[in-house]
Image (cartoon, rainbow, N blue to C red; front, side, top):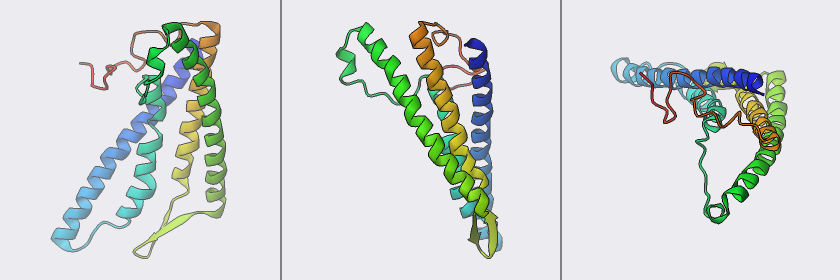
Length: 183
């Protein structure tokens, strides 16, 4: 279990770094676009398309597994907080299975759409420029697929009473659990 979890963590870190790069590149491109428009009346080509069709989907989907791995997703435990700890643990364990099923369906649906866009060569037009947009369609199935695997691993750990996910060390060395950089 721990060896599979290490592989998941490595892939998760790569996807999260790609999302971080997308944020930085997006900020630089939008800033340059505004500066070029104001100073030279020549904005950068395809900025709107790249922001909407490339950067934002990457920023949205790629870090999902990272957030789940750190157990930092939004939780509304209004009702469950009144359950005994044992009941909360069992409910959470079975919710991993339900979450895996939902993410598996999302993986399938987004994969089918991504493959369809790949085969049709999906693109967007901006200022008479053809921008292929099919490649980023694979961000969602990649993220949901990895999230499915993580939920399955969490469910298996629950069933097997494994402590693989109870390790208090941060899964991504160099970063603290609050998201800041560990110096």
